[in-house]
Image (cartoon, rainbow, N blue to C red; front, side, top):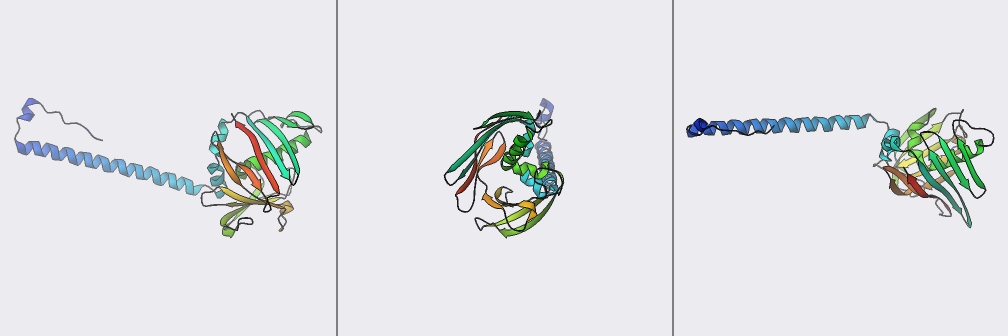
Length: 245
């Protein structure tokens, strides 16, 4: 740690040799303190690198998309849109993740419910919410969802862009949830951001759907892909009216 040398009148009268000696000693101390600081910084960096290396690929993807900021979210609003040829469909959502209160608005009306107390009337709305929310926050579901298994492949060809990417496959168990046994192939870059994905119903070897992940935007620290398209671009699934509180 750097310090200052304060000399009394007697010290000022000391010969040049002693003065030089004091200055040299001070410089050596400063140099040693600087080295200690550098060593500490390098140690902290190494510790952080070790911590990052301990994360699974799923955790790295989720964190890259802002999972650490999710704890601060009190309300999430978004509109789920689907364009297919000349048809357009949309439904809007307001979700309070802390209380699990959900509000759905569609052309047919409004449905309000709590996910902790579903009934026959609200279960269908909840299934729609799970679907739409999954498209919006799938990187987080990689670590949120239980009863899943993962597998990984490096340097594979993405189905739409044909780019060389990495693949993480998430497979759901045969029980629980609205669509048990399904599988998702996430194609991501070295930056751990998802570029494309494939949905395989019932873990079938044949893809049920493949779309892009694009037009990422930052919403209070949440990185959200606002556009998904298939290879023909005749199918578009996208999000509007996103707000995070």
